[in-house]
Image (cartoon, rainbow, N blue to C red):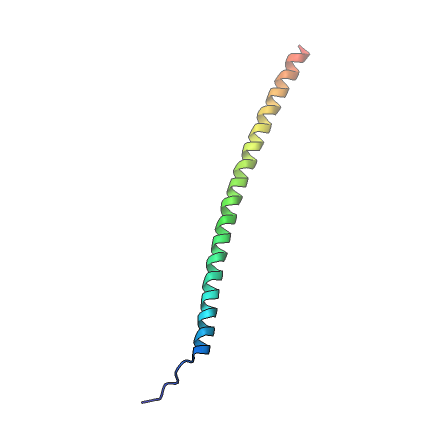
Length: 70
C-alpha cells in the first residue's frame, strides 16, 4: 500500500483560496454580463421610443406647415 502524503494546511489554504476566487470571479463575470445585456435592451427600447416620438412630432410639424400654407 503506497504511503499518501498529507495535504498541508498551507497548500490546502492556497488551493481553497484560489478555487474560491475563481468561482466568485466567474459568478461576478456572468452577473455583470447579464446586467449589461438587460441595460442594453432597455437602452434600445428607449431609443426606439425616442425615434417614434420624433417621427410623430415630425408629422405634426408637417401638418402644421401645410395648414399654414393654405
